[in-house]
Image (cartoon, rainbow, N blue to C red):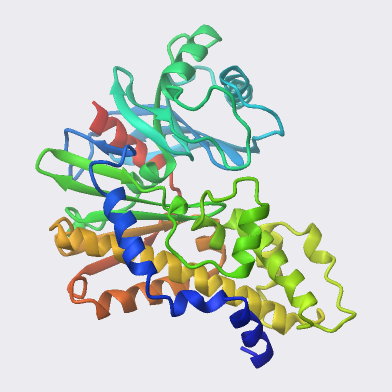
Length: 415
């Protein structure tokens, strides 16, 4: 890194995370709470996951509502094989106030469009929801009360809503009289979708999502069954903030919320880059005549693609790329330290059985090779250095489809 840029980032406390000695204790406290019985976002099934799932034919719909997109899948499962018959993806959210009727009307419009050519629609819908839920069981399966609504979307009367039950009632009255709806948090379902090697069949599984947002879920067997815990990792608060992070947080539409996520997730990294760039221009890190209008119209994907080549004729490209790399390295370090704290907890409480499968998914992990490599290297380093985790056998894997493969396991656990 060029000396002038390094001094600039240092002056604004960007690298404090490498020298701060307070954050590990804060991280451990939050991890211990998130993995304890006090966390409302955990599910305790009364069954353990079988080595192989039942072979009965199963047709189902999967509806995945993320922070930006709605995805729909029509699936057939038989003889331990999943086939996605058709799928659909659309931008979902508008700039409006979301009440139950508004949300359900919009979901049904997409569902109608998707199923228009299907002669006999399946009667089971699994709703994968990107925000925090308080899970509970009812006759149709797993359900959840909404604990939080989207970061950038307004809501009225959605917090506390029994999402599966209310959507099921709505669909049954509006064209789908046989529809049964189950609801699960997307990170928990992505964990169930993780392929576990045969030799690791009893291992603990951790899912890391780094996309527009970030989250971690943990699953392991207990004497009474299978436990899955959604940590809502993006809402942790343990890392030292730089001057740039404080500016972004203060001007965001949700100040003092999702403080860890704002440091590196896709919904925020473009804004953080712009904050750093603006300050760098004020501090004369770039030539006085430098104009970077292009960055005002880019989205997060455009920015990632812009920095893919190692060289470019774009003015000051090398400096700009070094800023991006510093942001990426910090985000990967945060994810690695967060996951290592979880591994320490699992080992200290005799839950890991010396084998852990870590599943990675999300647009940032898939599209930013630098992020994934840095994350994995840092995690392995932390594991080896710590006596509590040095004996752990870690299986790192990318989950290509984070939703549908886990649904047969979910239905088995709920049966």
